[in-house]
Image (cartoon, rainbow, N blue to C red; front, side, top):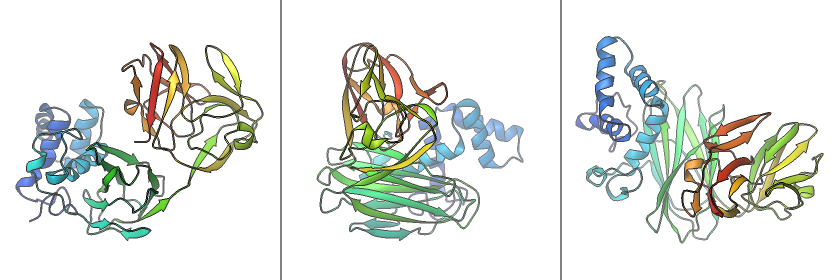
Length: 359
């Protein structure tokens, strides 16, 4: 029978032989060795429980995770083996010795429209994307049909420098989502589209398209009243009066006190008021990252066109972030992921720079 590498489209519970243990190996590497013991203890006390319910119980009870998120990471783990292995992401020593995960297809010319290969419940497809012939950005659009299937989709990028990163594509209620790769073609070795089915229904299908783009549109939405916001892409006109003619106030930035801003800067956050809900698309040039100056104390910052975990933000000098990140939605909330178009308060312990990436 197949394995998670030679036959990634087979279900995790298909009885695939020795390499079935790779899932348990992943859990112990990702979390800690006692997770396997806890799984078997749960099975011992609940012998009739569905095994995936058991996984979810243990992950949520002891590790602040769940089966769906862990399985998504496991699929990325499987993709980065053999010649695709790396010591930094996700970083386990045995990866070069594992088989090379089979690809659904390799995409080398654009535009490209594709669909799933053999896939079922609790399984995956891997698509390799080679860099385009020019320096255009690559837009990936994913369409997961046949609800109620639940997909978790990850884009993995490997730069020519060896840096490997991954980014989960947020999917809406229709299982649709998009991601823009902004790495120049001469710096991108390849990308991987890792599609995981994390639900127990058979018969899932999906389609996807990959196109080159020099401009990019991103949707933003704001509440009636005061909003803490940012501009996620570079526009031809960065004046607030052009970007947000609906605004009923000046835009304000913070620099040891509030000041009026007439022009938006990437990476910075602002207060702006609207008299009604605002939903709009912004079309411009996406950036791979942006670097802003930050001052000792509180600053308002904002991400680019992708939602970004705060853990991916870096500073110079290093480790000067001294607070949680706070967003605003009719009140302040802490944030572990920064949403495109939003602004966030953050405190730093020294003057320096902050680099905000898109992955």
